[in-house]
Length: 123
Image 1: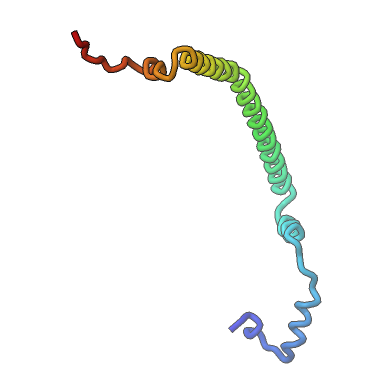
Image 2: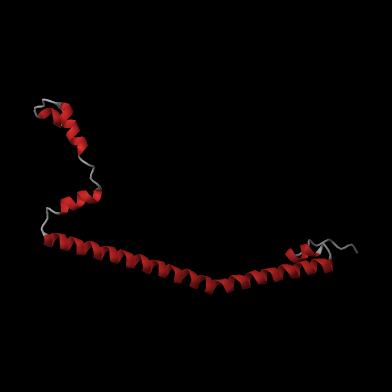
């Protein structure tokens, strides 16, 4: 049984029309209506606490954004030269090994990696 069936009804269609005539409340209107049942001092304290919390979260968010920006840009500025220098040194080493291979021939590639196997000498 529903709530409508609990009370005596002569005309169920008339009750349905009464509910349809009422406009729907928005969430804000509902909260405003519920807030009016509390004393003014409680509403003022709740408003102050809410506004302070919102300001605190905004400040914390702004601080975290600024801190992360400073951290990442400083990291790039500090570590980029080191990365570029190691890359340059690797390219220079590669260039030297290629130049050595061109000058000494294809067999020099094995010499650069390690000693070549020794062959027995015939006397």
